[in-house]
Image 1: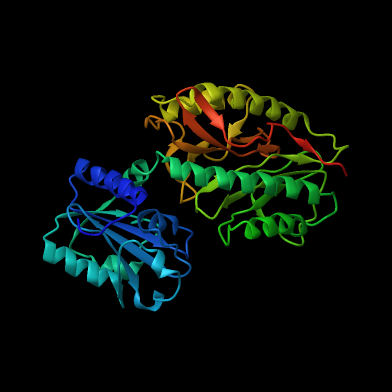
Image 2: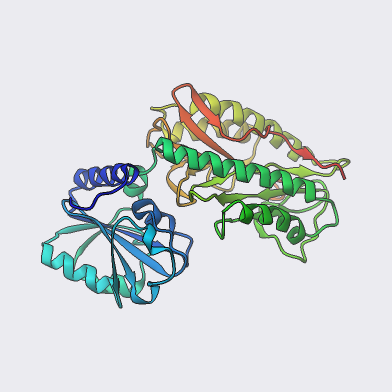
Length: 373
């Protein structure tokens, strides 16, 4: 290994190479694409943020890693931030295939085989033994370093304040676009750039429906809504923090009130359950109990690891036996839906796994916030 990397990248590459050895792989291809929102994996392995196009980080088991860009991507990012050798090629898959053949690689893991890798590059790798490595790569990066946790906490700070700005801007009769724009101005000013994924769930003045919506100008807000706020700050670590919002005098449905009771129980259950050694399955059962016992079902994954990609493995869900470890970070957001398929409650938190239990990284209390207006 001849290329000198920063200590943080050294740690990341070492964890990935341990995973390669465990699964008897000769190399790993890490796919990243700004087109699909999967740019974070490339930043995680190189320090370079894709601003446009796509790239592949190639990590041999016993040689220096390098990153391959399509030729048209030579100026679509600050390439001086990449700590690896950079190669530009008209068809990256052809270059990777040629190098794999020269090196005699047998089995190659691919992060992004199902959702990210460009078809033309997949076709160029025909004949190589490609192994989907999404879960394994995410598991290798799930435990956060101190430097990563600093970035996570900064993203939480930005997200939390964004919720407060959204709340201040909200009033019944305003459009979803106008209210979200106030929060988005803050997010961009704090360095999120385009790394925001913000939506709303609306319905009637008494309850919200389960469908996520883009905050459009034609969506006029009523007396109750659920903002869904997800951002990544300058360090590119995604977080999710939001709470339900109602007008001062809104009379909420009985199901909404009971779902809030279950949310309070989930919050306490997560503090106790999210400890090292607990399986994701058991965490899911612990936090879902208050909802299922009241007859509600969960329409979205209960939670998931979160990092430089918004949704990472492991998931917090039924049958997921992966065990939690200290300094894992999870987004938790039970998507409670009433039997009628109408009433819904959805609030988001970013949690840190510690020896003492789960720690929510936001200071926002678990409640439905009442607006002044």
